[in-house]
Image 1 (cartoon, helix red, strand yellow):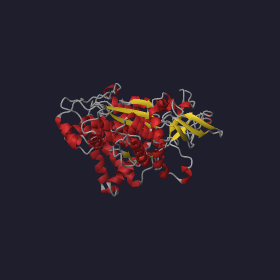
Image 2 (spheres, rainbow, N blue to C red):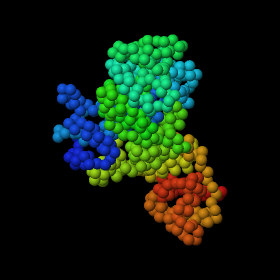
Image 3 (spheres, rainbow, N blue to C red):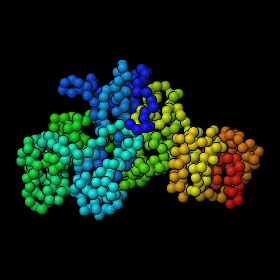
Image 4 (tube, rainbow, N blue to C red):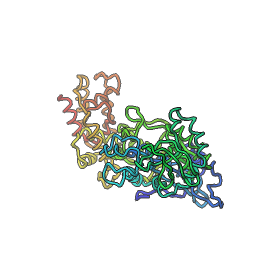
Length: 551
């Protein structure tokens, strides 16, 4: 765990433990699958209690994105829920482990779009990812670079996990016995897989992919089992020569569905979730795991993330948000909040959803202490505070919403600075010191970046229509008679009164607010105007109105 470790106590009171047993929150629903799997806890051959093993998988053929990260977060949510459900009278939960498994022995099939030195990768297509030079020039291989990026962010968020590399397991012979087991059940595995394949693919399919002794590539060729107990197979190499070779010690890689099943059995995995696109893979891998003497893990089939065009996010396309991008424009907590909600529903994942996620996180966080315990267990914040050690506690609130902050920064322009924003926050926030409001200060930096890249280029104030100009003049006159510290509610009342005046001809207050946003802020949407006036300052707001009337 990192320094931002859990702030909540590890021992829960009886009310929480009882409510958890019947909570409909999805992490508890998933955790109950494990309770059913191991009613008396997971035990070894001697009867001793052993950790329930949670696993997440990562294919380092491309840079990690939020789709990769979310699987670790969501699995951890289930892990923590399971620990709550298994907490005994002494406050001790059943033991658990989380393995983040990198499938870095896989052969590179396609060069990703979002990496440098593509020619370097092209020259090494087909080779295991850990045996391909790093196009970024920072690590010993392409896989080592991508694995490091993943671990960097998992560590930043304070996840408790064990990193396991497929290449390490294959090369060190740790998987040798499991590979021999695959050869022993070769015919049974083929009987499972062949009916699922197209006729042309059946001719070349093999559960075991040998590594060519001449090119070093992972070969998609049929094999003949020579000696299962010795791990020997026969195959035709890329140059046409017939090779008899061991598949042990890093000289092979299992085909995807077989590899997944082998891993479940070899590691003893009890829980692993996956995306909807892997539903069939999970089914076939579960059948193969049974043949190998194991059991398919419990797990959640989650819906996929879509980009702003509605297309599936892909590592090779690089069309999803990176974790760096989210953290540049939004907070860590908001990312966790967005990933928590509705895992079985498809969700858009692009920069446009960040502001709302930030504000909704804080809304849920602020209201949690007043909720009965049953509702608290359905609150995403309750789970997040116990999952990755997010800073702070429930009940805290932001003095300014992120949406309002974005409107302020939008008016200040693309060249606004952090100090400038804080000077305006002094109109609205008691003790307007970044040190006193670290969460808000983080969002000031995020708002400046978001405005620079996405808001400022699109803002365009229009000239007011005649009736709108008259209403703006009336609003200015009303504001002129108010003290600068009148407050957001008083300013909001004046704005309402002007908009409701039939003399200005607005069909609804919505039309009046739309006019304010478009003429003063340059956007079709905006904040609660009373709050904006209090934040931006009375004199500054009147100057903004004067600019609009002068157009």
